Image (cartoon, rainbow, N blue to C red; front, side):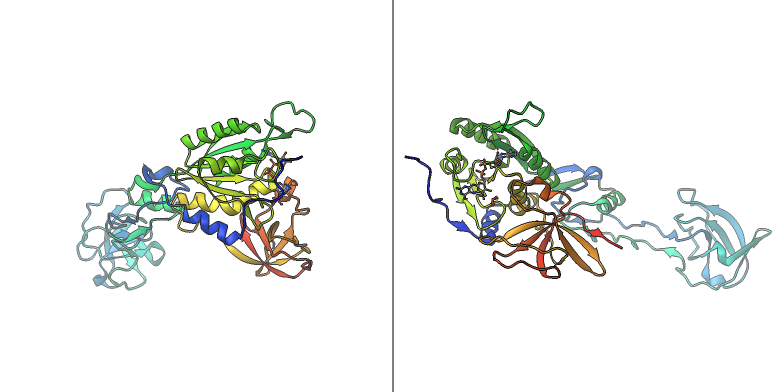
Length: 411
Ligand SMILES: Nc1nc2c(c(=O)[nH]1)N[C@H]1C(S)=C(S)[C@@H](COP(=O)(O)OP(=O)(O)OC[C@H]3O[C@@H](n4cnc5c(N)ncnc54)[C@H](O)[C@@H]3O)O[C@H]1N2
Ligand code: MOO
């Protein structure tokens, strides 16, 4: 008599409920102070107020001559030359002008400047072709950033421009949220290291390596826990080792109905399993637990199921843990370029290539959507949200999708 369970003891939860349960257990980790100039991709933990005006003194906006607007169109005597970073001690009296280069501080006494194209200089005299007002072509104090202005807000993911803003303000140390440490464990007697000789029927461990790369892409720090064979003591020990070192633990495999599917009972023994099945394809047996306040995701063994479940359920949690104010991928509407067959029993997240064309987003399927067909992930920059059903969606249908990568553009 087989001791296999005939029915899962875990109720099937909806995608929305699963997401809500995960996010309810996910609070930003603490912050740390780091070098601002190498903080690309990190999430700011505090607002940044500008400590000074930029520019801090009035500066020439163009190459030309600094002068006094009140002298009107009268020729001026050229008394010197000012360059950006050069000596700024020249002071202008009435009837005087000085050559000045873009970015050089305006000399005392000058209240305007004129671009070289609108002038002539002969025998030490400047002739101007246009009358000026005070302030013309002058970059005023605080014009770019005003002292006290909030230049960056907490929750910002620091991009190249933000690094530039911090450097401009001279802020070389900043407070950012800590990156989650994420331990990744592969399970399965049939699973071997990709570089090892593969016995017939064994599978190479693609999941641990793909998941660790996905963790890194999501801003986390992956920790490899290797491969645990299908033995409850071995897996318990690996899980405990992971929880000691990490904020989050991800396992691959061993979450469905087989006699060697040990992850769910183990997590129930060590902590609380919040859900063990989702009405979702690919990734129905995806499991979420907390053990001593740490998040644990039991992802399915099929390579597509594990990566898609990571994208939909784990990635938002990793983003929220590092303080990202917008942890979810953008939702868009796409027009089908190829017909789509839904799964009859569960909403399915099908892999698509999204292209921007003539003002609209179009989606092409990546082909067969089997959970073991890893090539269905190749080139995909979107997940099409296909409701359960029997009817094929023809070309031209409009469906919602998540954008998971950079948009392709045609024409
Ligand atoms: N009777 C039922 N059987 C299954 C059900 C079910 O509801 N009732 N659910 C199916 C669904 S849906 C999924 S998804 C899979 C998930 O099963 P597991 O998470 O238990 O995964 P395994 O059985 O351990 O492995 C599945 C498959 O993936 C390969 N694998 C495992 N680890 C890796 C790895 N690290 N790298 C690459 N490939 C891996 C493994 O060899 C298997 O081929 O269960 C269905 N079954
Ligand atoms: O949900 Mo499973 O991931 O269909 O293959």
